[in-house]
Structures are given as structure tokens and as C-alpha cells.
Length: 164
Image (cartoon, rainbow, N blue to C red; front, side):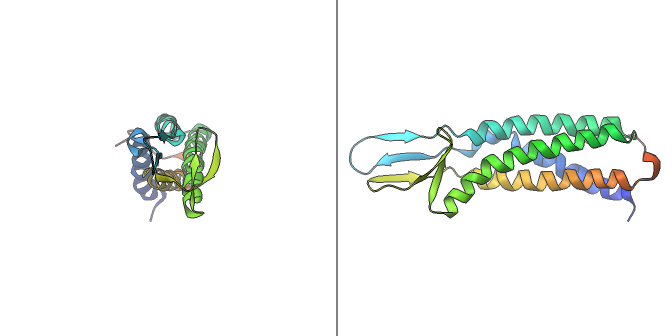
């Protein structure tokens, strides 16, 4: 397999993961409802905003990196920015996933772990596991993209259409 072939495989994966992050607001938010009474609360859902921000930054960075090909340094800087953007979402959504695995929820309003209390029913946000996974896959694909560029001798690959 040639390095260009590897680029053809991971480029759409990285771009697709960045596009998935743009749908962050559809991931829902955690809500608490009192078993007795009519009290309820909704979490701020910080991962939603982080996912959208990271998706925009990752798309821009990947687009810049692909546009800057075949130069050697600029594409690698663009890939590094994309990896950082994906990493931010992986962290923001990942803390929620870890909190769920520990039997609680992550509250973005206070950026803290909240155990489940008696007298309250909690409906956790369904989105964080999916956005954490998309961010991890996007980061790995961006790293693989950078690695494929490093393997190409003298950066002699022809410039490509950024998202094609």
C-alpha cells in the first residue's frame, strides 16, 4: 500500500468525524426530576458546545492542512490542531462517560461529579459516548493522516481537493 492510499482512507474518516461533532446540540442534556413534586433541573451540557467548536476547528484545520499539501510543515501543523480539537471533545465528553461508568453523572454547570441522590430520577444525556467515540476516531485518523504525509518522500504528493 502506498502512502497516498493511506491518505485516501483516513482523510474521509477524519473529515467525517469532524462533521459528526457539528451535531453536538442534538446529543441531549442530563435532566433530574424529583420523584415527589414537580421539581426538575437540566444540566448545561457543556460537551454540546465543545463538540461544535471542536468540529469547526477540526474541519478548518484539516482543510488548511490538505490545502497546504505538498509543503512539509504546514500540513503537519494543521493536523496537530485537528488532533488537539478532537482531543478537547474526547476529554469533555469522556468525563461524562467515566462518570456514568462510576454510577453518577458529570455536571457541566459545576464541572463536577454528582452521585445519584435518593428522591431524584436522572435521565443522562445520550450524546457524550457517541461524541467521545467520534472524537477519538477523528484524532487517530488525523494522526494517521499526518503519518502518511511524513512517509511520502519530499512531500511530493499532488495537492488534493480538501474534502473530496
